[in-house]
Length: 272
Image 1 (spheres, rainbow, N blue to C red):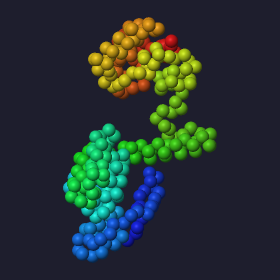
Image 2: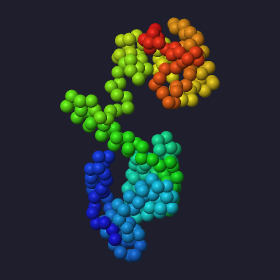
Image 3: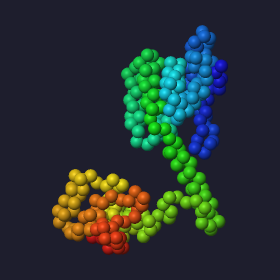
Image 4: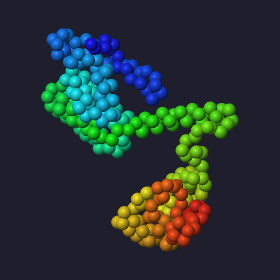
């Protein structure tokens, strides 16, 4: 029932097939038969079970994910299981989910403290698979990689033909005085040439959002600015420094005093 090929097959973001020779599990399957190459104890192809595990995580099917992890672990393919689960953290789960740390800890327990195919190791495998299946699933990182890679090719082709690209990166040309002018502070060569020092950084480069600073952090920020012995900030600058950015326009500048006018003027006005 198992696939006899001894190579691990995976696909890159561009769809190309990648293969590598991998260690095989030995012994008998559940039916008392000598296992073929890449066969699990249940008589399945480990490639199929591994693929099943990933699809179950994506679809949040906890029972199927738990079984697939258990099957790989008990069959001597724990190395394959933990490699796959760690891949899912970056390929199939929402960024920032604590499941990454859980899976890492379960792998450590299963492989360094206990034997991965024995009872405790199998419990770790099931726990890790359940954690992954219960996490928020998304292909956002993979989709972003594929999209940005495609745009990079389109931009390069357009430049070669002296044309404007039909699709561009979300930052465009990323030049000073444009939408992202705030990034050109003293940490960049252009910002340094323009004399954009601490004043510019505090009032533009260091702003956060969309919730802004909490009350304590805002208080510390204001006091630090007021106590600065080298720079004297006015009220508008103090307000702007702690005002949250607009979630609909996070790179836009603020109307700090609420008078309906853009108080920033030219960003080059705020230099040391």
